Image 1 (cartoon, rainbow, N blue to C red):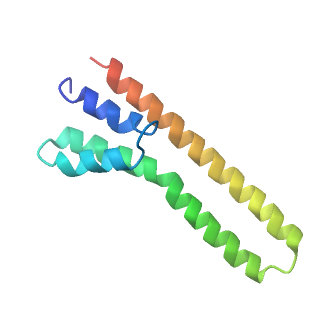
Image 2 (spheres, one colour):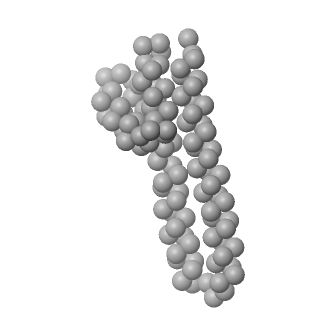
Length: 107
């Protein structure tokens, strides 16, 4: 664990400087190092989660806007979906920072 702790921490902390791309590169390049490969894969999916959720929520909102008769209902749906997206995005961001710091201070 100690030999990989910097690369593992950077995989998670890359949410601050190069989200999605840095863990993807590390994931692709560390196939011979199982621990770094696993951590980079988890960080990659954790960074990608808000993007996938955001696109999904936009599609849901678009489709429901076409089929709903009331603009009020569409507005409330948009507020709820935006709140869900915000909670997931902030949780993903904070969890990435926490995990990166945990890898840095681990012995």
